[in-house]
Image (cartoon, rainbow, N blue to C red; front, side, top):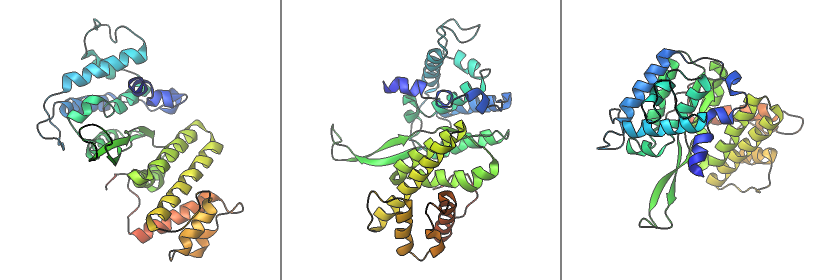
Length: 298
């Protein structure tokens, strides 16, 4: 089941009216750069945290070929394809629709072969985003979200390991200013494992925003905000009730810090989004982190 989820839970399937949403066409220059970069990545020619990784390029294109056949429902991909030519996948990618190309960007990271060339290194994701920026495309790719776990069975039972909570996903950069000043820093913050639930809620809110579903978007943004506040309270050891709303949680944070009292105005008469924005600004300023860049660094 999870194999087919990887195939069909792609950008074009998650995004209603994907063709209209992803209206900025992908130029040939970007397609060539990405495919060339993929070849280097899966041949083991890119910097990596795996030593002796070898050449897995043929395996990668075989998997992409398979996925494209499933998604398109076709027996061949191109006029020159004879039904058993994995490298025809690369030819298809050079000419496919924009939504299909964005699906391919996610496929690069979410496949079993990837762990042979990199162990979820976000520097690889940053390389892709650098390529996308060369043609000023309004698309970006989020980071891997990983967490440490303790194995409960098998030969590594009792030992710590790492698992992926969320694979890189394509996002539409609605505007460069909004992306750099707000969405980018939030996604960077929420990529940390202890914010996994808040990250899931915020990504769902972004999907609702792109659908034009403002009501659900605001609800999920509020839920994500509350989840972040609860994580802060847990990690700081501040008492709160699991059923506390944002208003009560903000007051708990204000009580235990030196943040300005005006930030506690989180009520039905004070817009939650304004309060959340002000609190976020104050927390960022106190932490000494610089805002305004989407280039994710940890």
